[in-house]
Length: 310
Image 1 (cartoon, one colour):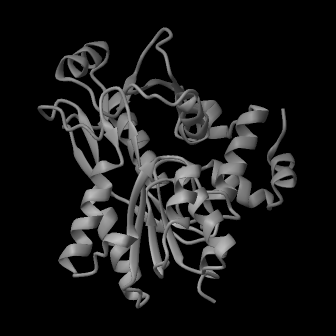
Image 2: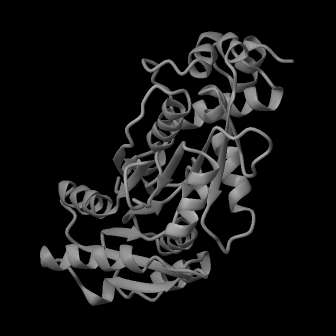
């Protein structure tokens, strides 16, 4: 099994940084990509800190509402497992033996919520308030997310603002329609809405590319509904030699580091660390009362993004 020094060498950081990341030192300031790389390497090598080896792992199941994108559940689990392990939690997609808690993400009926609650008293819902406080919940503050985007553009003296969005039909709901409607309403209230700069299509790269190419005039700031559409928008902007500031709505996973789009992360690392802390508190009897927490989105500006407009 690899040690701290081996992980540090592979990740190109100091052993002290590895130790502080794996011990969840709240005073440490590192980029998310560095933190993720360290946690992933530790997970790959099966490394556990002394504290993790001493602590009994809690068994928690992650349940997601039905999705139409194959492999998403496994990808999200792989993203969260290192963070969960650092918190003393064994996170899985299925119940195997003892179950200390359930984290349920997405839209579920009251009957489904009641079923989860019968499996364990320690239930955390994400983006579903349920009917009472017998379980915890975390709600994403979506309206604030769109407001952050508009405020960022205005703070940068950008008033020529467009929107390129995708619509994705799931079995139980439609993704993308609400965020487009809310951003349009914001622009209208500020008297900034222009129909030729507000385009809707499919939630994929090809659609983002063609929607941008169809614009005879390109706005100075563009809000994009998702990462797949964002790839197409950025490709088209490069081909046309435009330096518009692009903000990309991103639910779960970090953008590619080379992307020059500014990331609006909806499910932030802080949201996930709060979720793990809440389920751990209930499972260990440290808290009885149910809580509802509201989590804001966060604008993340990488080095490539900061060069936009120069």
